[in-house]
Length: 294
Image (cartoon, rainbow, N blue to C red):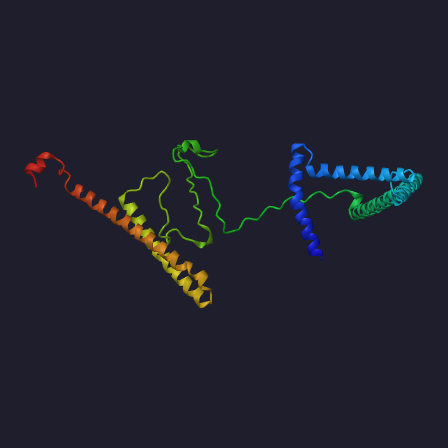
């Protein structure tokens, strides 16, 4: 039954709704509304004619509608009379709640202030004279006994006369050597194949370049072996393959680095041979030697 009512209401909306909406948009009156107003006017005329025929005046509305209207008006009148009293009670309750909240907030602030004063007094009793203790000065970090200390190196351009002190003659000079700091951790630069033995702004010749590339190739090969040994130890220690898989990639990179150093060294070796050939035959570039020499 409910489905049938919903279906009929939907059909009525589909039938009448679009036409009413179109007339409302255009600002015109729909024929259905005009027909309904005409029916209502005809019914009103028939009711007036019937009342005149029977000799009584037709009321403007029915008895039940008059009763409901009277009930509505009486209810509004009672509510209008009771509203000031209700508003006064509501305002009194609101002010009472606000006073309670303000008293609770003041009590909370007072308790917090008392606790704060008590803690401040306790801290003052712990300190002599109630004065704040100055912050301790940062302690100096002791220097390790094996840590190297740099000393000033004398300027080689200065003459001995510039360093003569009281009681020393022009020829009496003391020669001081600066102690070279040793690297920390017990490392020795002589054992490091990749150690840079050059000084700043010092030119490096072919022989130095050959030594450097040879040391680089040797160091890459050594590191490659270390990585291989480390991967083997990780495998023995049950380290997952997802982690040990990086080892072959690192060894491959070290292998490429070793091959690059070897290629660099080979090219430098060829340049060294060319230089030795030029030094063995210094006149090889002259025309007379090329035509008549050899």
